[in-house]
Structure formats: structure tokens, C-alpha cells
Image 1 (tube, rainbow, N blue to C red):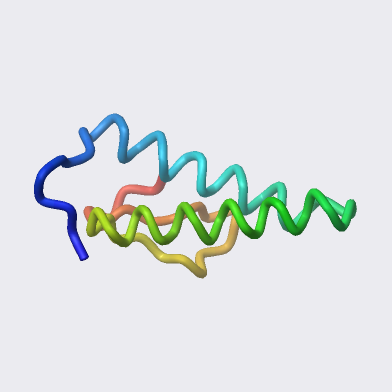
Image 2: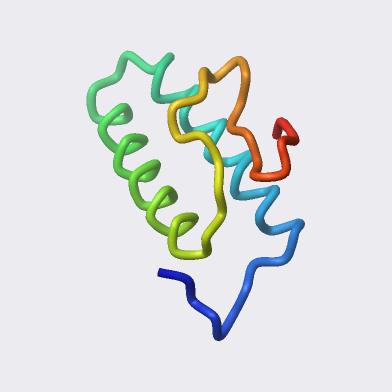
Length: 75
């Protein structure tokens, strides 16, 4: 569901995708259970927000590859 009343700017979209990559990397590397759980929760919320704005990227991309923006640009 896209929120048509307000849209992300390209810079905001880029920053959110970079944040997604950073949080994903931290979640994969962090061995502290409470922090790992918090990161997973934050990632779920961020995926929901990005989906709500129709931002397309590969949720399952390897961290080293980074999420891929719909225009094929690696973030």
C-alpha cells in the first residue's frame, strides 16, 4: 500500500536503503541476543515502511552485495 499523500525524496530512499543494509549486516554479525532481536524488529519495521512507499529492493540480497534498488543500482 503506497501512501500517496507524501513521498520519499530520492535522497531519503537512498538513506533508508543504506540503513537497511547496515542493520542487516549488524544483525548477521551481532551475537548479543537482545541486540540481535532488536535489530530484527527494526528490520521488519523498515521493510514494512519501504514496502508502504513502493520502494523495491531485494529483501534477501547478501549483505556483501547490498540491497538492489529498482533501477539496478547497488546501494
